Length: 113
Image (cartoon, rainbow, N blue to C red):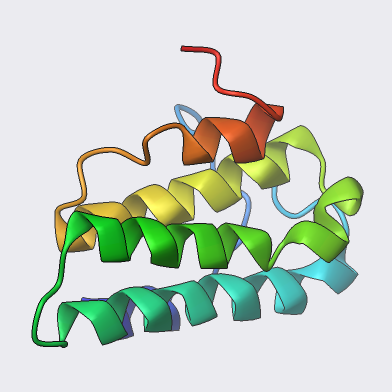
């Protein structure tokens, strides 16, 4: 499932109900794709290790989200939402039920719950 996730062309426009218009700046697409795929590597490394745990996956989530720090201000709302959607897909692959507010913090700068 990780290989399929990495192979998928990312940040493409999608019609409603998702309604993603596509990457806001085309020059960011390879950078964002590389970082999302690296996050998939982090998750896969844990999944194939001897003792996968929610705590380890949350650490991988932190590490993956932090990789967007230097381009964060260049991302529009839809791009940040799409990044969160990709992380949710990775969470689904490994059965991680909650980001414990991490995705909300990434998206909004705080956890609104």
